[in-house]
Image 1 (tube, chains in turn yellow, red):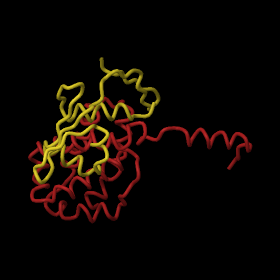
Image 2 (image 1 turned 45 degrees about the horizontal axis):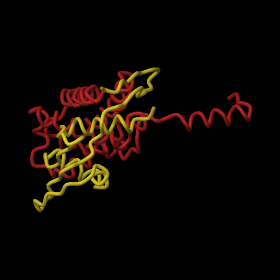
Image 3 (image 1 turned 120 degrees about the vertical axis):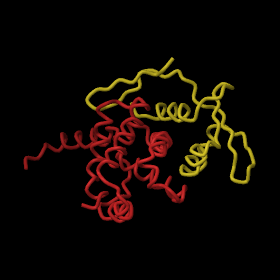
Image 4 (image 1 turned 45 degrees about the vertical axis):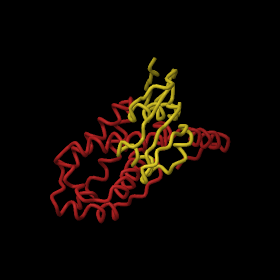
Length: 84
Length: 139
């Protein structure tokens, strides 16, 4: 189920969230080494480097064992971090 | 200027400091990350815009996109009018104009719509970006 977003007077409020956040990321490094890591480990990589891995299609995201697109993974993360 | 009673002023200050900023409302760094990736895909798929990125260093471009999104989302602002002019001077010389600025703004709006950002918030972000138009275009 998708989380619902409502808007009131310019503020954005997430009213529900049951989407599974990405829980595993497989990254191919510059030296072609491939590493399977948790999402929390992925988030310790500096922001600009993370973005480069995603843009260069070198990061693959999984939720409950199912691969999800990078845009979807990052969108779920954003929603979970948005202030209510 | 009419001052508020001390208690009312203190309450007002507390309320203001607790109100989430635009940056926080959007999701902070996670919003920047999600937006930069989507926005980059859109810009590079637009041949009118992609040509301005030809031959540029990818890592440096990502850093600039992060700074741009952070500024647009009301986070820490590394831009000033002066360095926006300097940063874009070569692009303006190569033909960067209002039509490109409009296209960038549209891609930004689409990006935020795809991220389910509230319409009022999108308008706020677009207004922030549009306020830089004259500096970016060197006017």
